[in-house]
Image 1 (cartoon, rainbow, N blue to C red):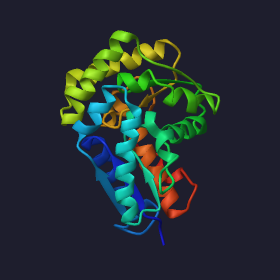
Image 2: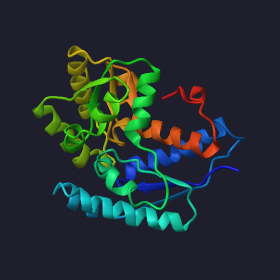
Image 3: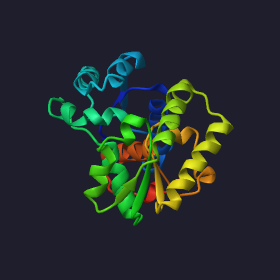
Image 4: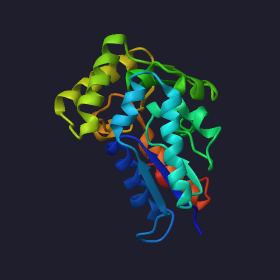
Length: 239
C-alpha cells in the first residue's frame, strides 16, 4: 500500500508539472504505469494573488488551510504545495493543518547537500527571493545563497507573472534567465535553484550556465518517496 498524496496547488503550470512528475516517475519505484493515489485542489490564482501582492501571509495561509481541508476529506495522508512563494505562509499552515506536509525548500536543501554544493543562486518571484524561505533552510545544512540584483529580481518577477503562469515560454526570456544565472556564477554560486515552480518549464539544464535544482520535480520526487516508503534518491537523478 502506498500513501495518498495531497497537492495544494496555487498556479496551474507548476502544479501540473508536479502532478505529472509524480504520475510519470511513479513506475521508477513501482510497476509499469503505477503511481500513488493523488488528490489536488486549488482556488483561483486571483484569490492567492490578492493576498500575495498585499504581503498578507495570514490570508494566504487561510486559503492553503481551506484547500488542505478539502483534500484531507478525500483521505490524503500528507500534503505538498508546488508553489515556492506560498511557503512564506508555511509555518502558519502546518500549525493548523489536519495532515503533515513536506517543505519544498527543505527538499531542495537536502538535494543540494547530497551534491555537495556550497552556494546556491535563488531564482523565483521577488517576494520569494527576498524572503528567508530558502536562506533559512539552506543555512540549516551549511549552504550559502545569493539572489539576483534588484533590477533582475524585478524583471524575473514580471516574466513569471506575465508569461510563465500564463503558459508563455519565450526564447528571449530563456536567454535572459541564462544571463542572470551567469551573473550568479560569477558571484561564486555553484548551482542555481529554480525556485518558482514554472521556471523549470523555461530553464533546463542544457540552457543554464550552472547546475540546476528543479524545486518542482524535487518536491514531486520527495512526495513519491514518502508515499512509497523509500529514502533512496538514486532513481531520480534525471532532470
